[in-house]
Image (cartoon, rainbow, N blue to C red):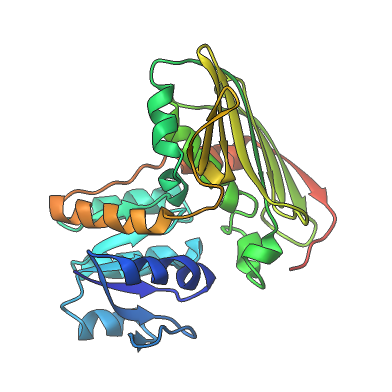
Length: 301
């Protein structure tokens, strides 16, 4: 099947393009970007032009920032193409609901790459029948390393520390059967920004989360859940699973997430199905609704 990639920035070049190059399901047939291109792939500067000139392209994967993504998604669906959305699937929940309502026969896949981490499926299986008593999530990374010069990520709608933090929430909502609720939140917003640089959440089932977006030392993507049947630990963004301190599965490097996303997208298209799970995004929206904001020192990328 042929697919187009819209938004040729860092995440597209680092993850999407290599995943598609190795995919047995997809051919990267076109790109749409105001600046980026992929060698050997037909490039367009305008999405509408690409859709009009490439009727044989089956699907479009959107790697745009959240705020402009909705208008692009509407064009894709109105053209009758299948739609894959980078996380988060939109800038607001209402936008994603609107896309679902207009999908028609098109597949929509709201992708959560951290759910494809090597340790997550085994963690989900192990959690079946177990009750969480307490938990701790530490998701701390350097925005300057992962989003150099991308000021939009600290603007309104850019999500700030929730851009990586939602990855942790996507894992939690995947492996814990009982729906999670947000009980409390504190958001640290730089004086010159609109989105938080740090956030601390209190969730149901005794789980606390620490999201920090200016970690200059070693990056940390870990969580620990104490259950009535033992302690589960996921490290390296879900890639390493430990039970009661003993390694179970995974690898000490993050790998294979995006190839798995595109394999899932292909399966959904063949089945004529969609997959739009908004549980991680709901928790983020709740944090912005209920969270106590405090202004911190200005921050520049």
